[in-house]
Image (cartoon, rainbow, N blue to C red; front, top):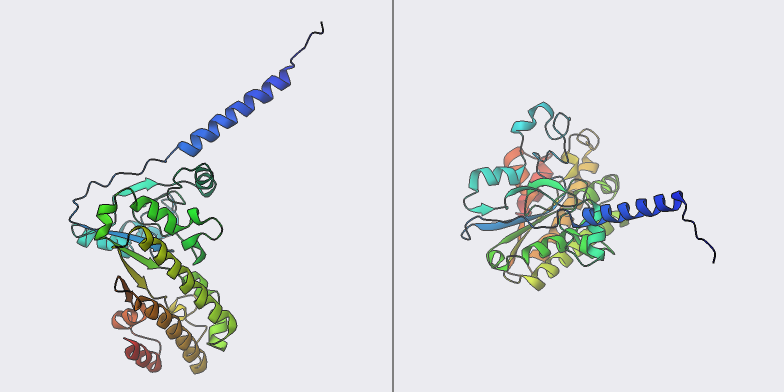
Length: 299
């Protein structure tokens, strides 16, 4: 009878494979528990889906201390709107507890593939109900082919843990600035350019799909749609589009985009629309008399 000899390299490879499998299992299962919200049920649950406009500045995982991000040396006292609301009206509006929660994209994908809750992607330090992340585009809402990795699916899975809280809850959808800024040159040349119209149509379509998915599972939840920013007011673009024609064209494209969102909000009593452009004029002025007149007309 022949003797079978097991060589050490084979044993080593088997051990490495076992350790890799064990490490993968730990990685997939790690962080899967949903943090508890012990706040009074009388507070209004407030969830957010969006981009850097809503990603909390005090997130030390995404923006390590000492970096120039999110205020730099003034970081400790620099906040965005959800952080301000939580500090001023936390006894009324509840964005959830401040937590370190979520998984990297690949781990979330693996969890989803084996039927586990994907959680929040990426892992960040933020309020529990804030799914906004820097760099997100309108595609990030529904996740494309990987719907369970979209912000909407991740949020709805979380809402399912406490449906009673969301009968009087509010979801804010504030997204589209990254899609919109990518076609700013096109807006300046022609507000009806194909790329401009396509960007607006795509974002409104994704937002409408997000609304349908939320209401399919939580029909009583209110949803607030926030208009896009006028990107020519950004510091990096402020000196670039100064001609009367460019300003008027960009303002027209901006008005058209927000008009689409306003129309979507008007189709359902559970939806609302916040005109960010009008708010900007109220608190900070506008780039031209024509822009002010247009915003006043739409308000």
